Length: 290
Image 1 (cartoon, helix red, strand yellow):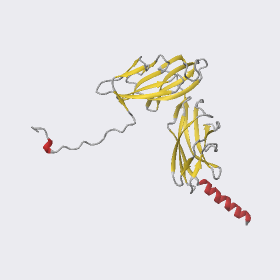
Image 2 (cartoon, rainbow, N blue to C red; image 1 turned 45 degrees about the vertical axis):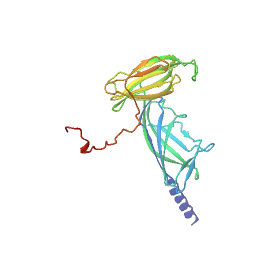
Image 3 (cartoon, rainbow, N blue to C red; image 1 turned 180 degrees about the vertical axis):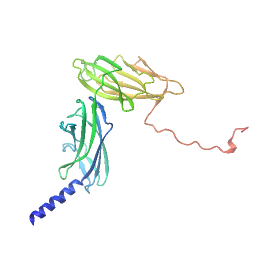
Image 4 (spheres, rainbow, N blue to C red; image 1 turned 90 degrees about the horizontal axis):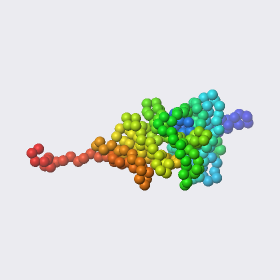
């Protein structure tokens, strides 16, 4: 009888444990270049019946990513913590965008699967998400490949680096990537996406006097992007311009800022379009003769 009661308690506990979270992981895309950061979106529905607090200074890492090759070989897991505590409200849904780095990088080529495990601090258990597939591939620089030295004021000053710009096809779109490599060893230091590109117009790519890289390209019809990359391999900023009534923008090197865009008008891709309807005019407001 005691044995049956114990089994029943274990069964009920397992049922409760499985119901603590409903977790899903998705990726911002499924195909990555070697060395490119993997960005995951983790969605958590708290079904525990109570608010749950995870993270916080000195607290246990609340999120683990398991990554396996298509052969089943497991790579080093990646653990994510949080300096500030996160509250998962009872019955609530939260989304967390996480860049997977540290113990894992997209250095290996092939097909991989990723699972997110979320901590339930009360029970000390981790609860697994679905399994998401990703492909890591590589491409050679085909638009720009030039060495430079890291100037004073930036990390690793004096080191020899190389800027590389890669035109890469992802499914039905063309993407423009920047890669920074060590000029002595050829090791990939960073790889990141500049944005989609339309090759109707050839991108303008040049370094300024401070060894910043300027990339000016047509992102979509009538919309141009000016991306600036610092010598330390970090994206400095992106600015967008619209081809306004045939006044096509162009990049001109020189000046105090290293480069300047002439023509076009500044464009904010995140701004909402002005869709407000214009008020109808009264018949009495018609111009004479109409």
